[in-house]
Length: 458
Image 1 (cartoon, helix red, strand yellow):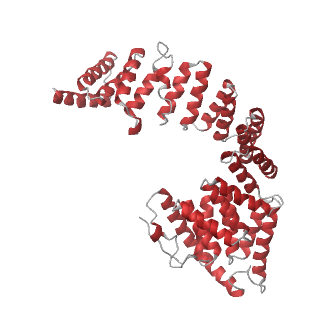
Image 2 (cartoon, helix red, strand yellow; image 1 turned 45 degrees about the vertical axis):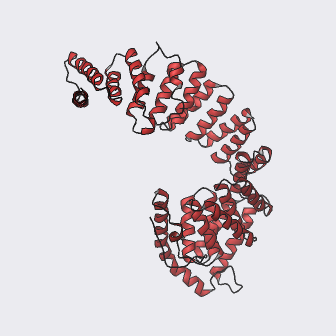
Image 3 (tube, rainbow, N blue to C red; image 1 turned 180 degrees about the vertical axis):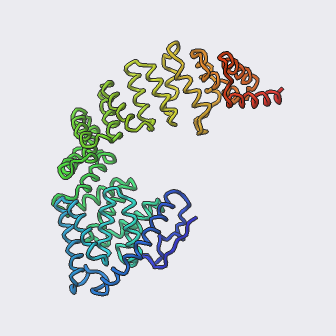
């Protein structure tokens, strides 16, 4: 269990980070990541603290809260104000550059750090945003921005999510003029799958804008499509987002909304543009294949799924969809091969589809593959000795080879039938001897093991 305190109180009055004694974040991958980020940020904070202290000494605690500004604090103030103007105009890239440039000149303002964190978080750069927020909490612990950053960090770690989201929403309501705080609240509502609240806060944000940032239009369209099913309204924002940044992710969003509307032809036209910009994205090819499958264009869908597999051969879902296409096309042997590869990757959604397909008399490779999965899988959830034995027997009837016999011997052993396992292993050894070769070491090891257990049983 991790307990971390860095000494300074946060905006909530607790030691930094992030009330870990209170929430007791458990040892897991995410907690380790958070700890690493905090430690890195702690080192970074020590590097910038002197600059921040000098900046505050030359002006006040924040360059944005005083009329008596130094040239550096004026730069920070102007960068912050202009960034919101650019966001309103729909120029998020320019706003991000302004904030970055402001921090190069003036690092002593919490609003600049907070804006940077929110902008990065809006573009899914969660780790980078967490680093910014962690530094903010450390450097400016008693500010509204620090409190919001702390709540966002807790939410991204899944700590007391319902309660901390309510606190963030309340904080935003108490600071209604804070553009970036409202945006962060909207982001976290979406992250926590609270569609109505996400839509509410993104709508409030857009009312303050002429056009709005690309990521606001893109994300509110996601909420409208996936959670609220308001497709026409979603398309309005999709068109704006694509006009602002016509990239793979924005085109993907538009294609998905069109698919949800049943506009398959239009969706395919957008997918074509999307893949022209991101030809190496396997997920995009897979999703385009899904549209074609719904259109019953199975051969074209198969082409898209095959491209996805070429780009990422480790995703079992892709093989499953290939199998379904082959089933529709009557290619049962190819269907079996794809399902076996899906199962080999640990995906077992339709394992029994093989058993119901007309494979008898065609080939036994699929049954051999199923036997291997049910008997030899490293994941106990996929093991089923009874099914494995059934498929191993079927495979041996169709394939004259060492592999199915070896799996059959292991299937008998997995079912506690060691006498039968010994008999089959002897057949494997005889086949090797008939070729003038000695059986492999693993076969000999199995033979000794099965023989000993068979003797114990008898």
